[in-house]
Amino acid sequence: MGAWGGCWGIHNPKKHPIKFCKKKRQEWQQARGAEGAKQRQTGQSLQTQWQSIQTQLAYKRATSYLANPNQVGYEDYSYDEALTDLQEAIKGGNADALVALGDMYFNAQGVAQDDAKAFDYYTQAASKKVVSAYARLAHMYVFGAGTKQDTKKALEYANLAVQGQNMPAHLTLAIMYINGIGVPENGDKAREHLNIACKGNVKQACQVLDVIGQ
Image (cartoon, rainbow, N blue to C red):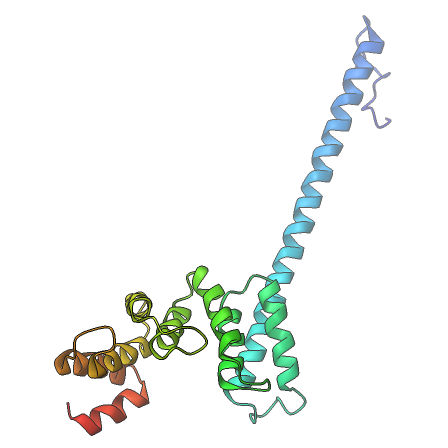
């Protein structure tokens, strides 16, 4: 039978055969259209999944290298490639890559040190609710790095970071309480935040505790 499902065959009604065939043809076209749409959706879904995988791989490759450029397996990798990978990850929607790229400029890893650029990338990441970006912005607002000093915003971002279980933010709050930056000097609160940060493996917090005493 043909594509019309045997329109002219034994199943064809004796009355109004033309109308019947048109109906069968429409049903066939609709079925083919639905099948094509489903195939396109499947193809788009697979492409999206593939792009997501590539984005994650680019991010992991770059951040792993930045954490230890001398590790085995990265002999042919470079800061330029890390920069490119992070930019590609950002294009793919990875908000954490914004923080990593900001860190490159803040720490001068393969690029000229630029607090303003770092601040911009951290701000973009914070707008996407990346907790580590809150902590970095708190630090920058405390010291006026890459932006004007703003202790109110520093406290706001530090508290947001702490709510997100970010340990370095506790160190920033401790510094604020030790020096009375945006808050009254308070040794007890400073030690409280330092102890939390130290237990969270923030080495600098442990070092400060060794100096001022727990």
